[in-house]
Image (cartoon, rainbow, N blue to C red; front, side, top):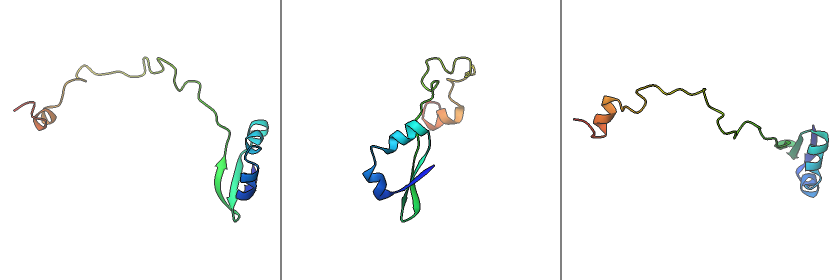
Amino acid sequence: MQRVNITTAKAQLSYLPKELKDHNQEVIIEKAGIPIAKLIKYSTSKNAYRTGAFIDKIQLTEDFDDLPQDLAKAFGMKD
């Protein structure tokens, strides 16, 4: 983990992402010695947007589309 003050971070902004990529380490940005931000390497989940990711994981009951009586009455759908 590398710690830099905010002035150095501003001056080396193009260099800091290279540190993340090459050394896979975090960069803590400090102001007056107090940590205010953490720069980490961005990574995506390969399964996040896969089509069909929830097939066979979600099951709907037979009465899923039926509105409960109290809600139907509240919406004025039943007397």
